[in-house]
Length: 129
Length: 361
Image (cartoon, rainbow over all chains, first blue to last red; front, side, top):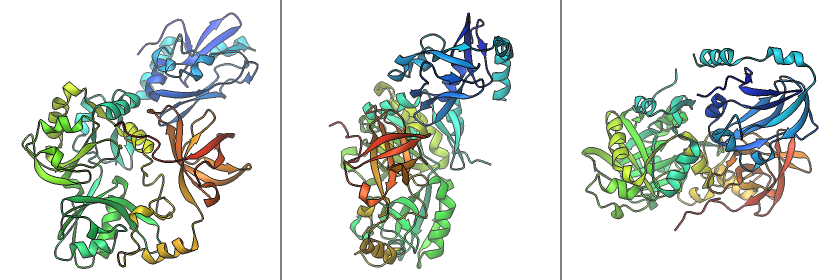
């Protein structure tokens, strides 16, 4: 399982790449592997508000629906639209081509609550037990 | 505690993801649902379906007795032939949908759904008029070898000429030296076989089939692909698409209800319902806007709930969202339109002919 060490993580298995006043958000390699083949995504629109810990979209495998939770509060400033036609990209490349949204965050404080790579790895291991 | 089939360890070794289904710890997938689905449509796949149950009717009254508990007509089923149908309650609700394998008039094997093993046995045993009814579910392993190349794979392992076994026919023979009931039946819409062997022979049977199928690119397949394959064919799933409160007529299974064959449990109620007309019908639909319908979602007409989705997925073969739903008879005709409430969003849907998927010639 691949967990890049330059990213931050959540206990809901999202990853965040911090870029200035924005974060790029996607789901982790572990999450895509657990979900299985992803066949549908539902993402917000540019301009939509998001709130930390609240659902901003869903990913669906052939069998199940899973919500995706925003790691920070703020406003959606970019959406990875090509995912609608190629949701399998999330399985194939969860950290690069499979990114979902970019959020302009309203408070830098929320970033401090995110997990670093070691904390996330530990969390995944504990969850598996 | 959840039960395990005799192949549980085989699945774990093969890297399966195990989930609980109907009280069983079963493989939901190995490499992935889409790859497994495609293997069965294009080549060949192998499923462990040993969680299915087997209830056997024996004795001089076996045929007569089962006829009175089964909606289809076993008089029209020859020895060596299988027949699909329902077990119904007096009020017409479906106890289970089953396949009866008529070995002879005094020896019939009823293949029942995993979740209903005990319920069906209790139901049948309590109502068998003079037949000897035994629950042999734990004694059998059952493997489903499915796909257009299934016959080629199986032929390498058995001396029976497989072309002599027609669809929904079966025979007893060895497969790689293992005594089996070889049935040309399945739940995928593809050509294929279901092999019933002694429980303890299951792992060996699995491994010889996987070995024999290597040249064809055989894949082990889990319940995920089993579900998407059956739904593309609009095959009903007990517990999702029908239950004790729905009748075969409502579930679109009137073709396996033979009201004229003589009396059977539920016949009067079904006759009455047929005359009075149905209040709901199970239909196949596709979504004409983005989204996936799921079990339990509401069917909306003019914004009001009028029915419910019982199964839904994105069809791996067709790339579109498909599903089954109970709707009022006024919405059941092909081409009728309604909406499905997908997490608060009304998504447009259209009734279509089933099966959704047409097998390649």
